[in-house]
Structure formats: structure tokens, C-alpha cells
Image (cartoon, rainbow, N blue to C red; front, side, top):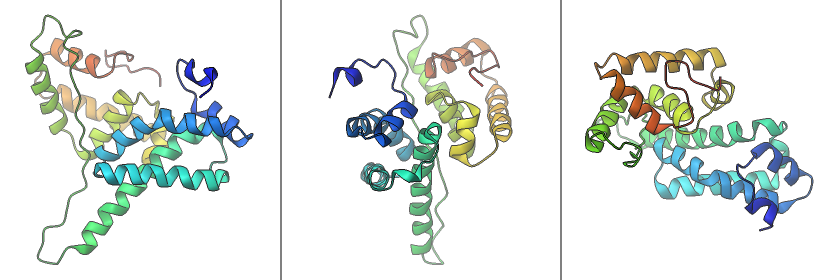
Length: 214
């Protein structure tokens, strides 16, 4: 891979897509390499097995390679990719429901993800306690609430992008995230501990009740 892609500090999906549709196949490979890890995490959190997640990502990129016209606006590359993963997980879920007998319990839609605690960043605090509190926080949320918390804090998406991924309006996304945050605060967690756990999950966001960027 060329030095241009190796030295790029933070990949720009829009720029890479524009380069690809302009004939730069290396940009397509760079996009795949950069976006694969977050897509894989999102896919497994959405209920896909690791094999299903890998297959889904491969299928999406093969389809885009064959039909780049599927993305008309380069600015929507990331939302398109995440939304495609979401659709793949919904198809798998629907297939499971159809295969069940009437006597069997229907599977429930889920969104599960694990966050690790950076023990160096958490110096002076009980890392095990932080992990337990983080797990408690996530379990208190509905799958839909966990999904928006994941997209907002882990993937650091803004509300317009989240709205495209979850197929809701930016205002609904903002309200859903706000309600999720209020629910977490209602658990009776220590204020300092809550802010620390949130900050450890996402180091680039302001955790005082106002999350940036919007």
C-alpha cells in the first residue's frame, strides 16, 4: 500500500470513496481495511456470529465493488456500510424466527457489546469495580438504547450519521440518546464514577451531559 494511505492519520471514508470511483482501486482496499474492525464489532454486537459478521462485510464490499453506484453521495459511505450490516443482522434474526416451531420461544432482538477498561487511564480507581458498573449500566438499557450508546460513544458518530444507520431522524436519535443517558444516571451510580466510566469508554467526547460533536 502506498505511503499516502499508510501515513494518513485518520481515514476519511468520503475521500477514499471519491478516489475509488475515480479509478483508484487502492483506495477501495484502504477503505475496507480501515472500516472492517468497527463494522465487525457492530455486526457481532447486533447478534451475528463472527463467521456471519465476516461474510456480511465481505458481501457488502463485493457488492459495492461490482455496483459502486449504490452509494450516490460519498458523504453517506459510513452510514451505508453500518446500515447494511444492520440489515444483514435483521435478516438473520428473521430467519431464526421462521425456523422456530410454534412451541419454541421466539428469539429476542439483541444488541450486546463489551467495553474494556484502560487500567492505566483508570489509575487510582478500582478497575474491577469499573467493569462491574459498566456491565450494570449496559444491562439496564434496552437493545435499542445500547445500540445508540454504542454508536454515539464507541464509534463516536454524530446524530445525522446515527439517524441514517438506525433509520430514524436526527432529533429522534438525540432524544433516544438523552433518554438512555438519563436512565443510566437514574441507576444511583456515583456521579464521579459514572463520568469516569463514560470517559473511559469514549475519551474524545465531553461527558457533562452535553456530548460533542452534535
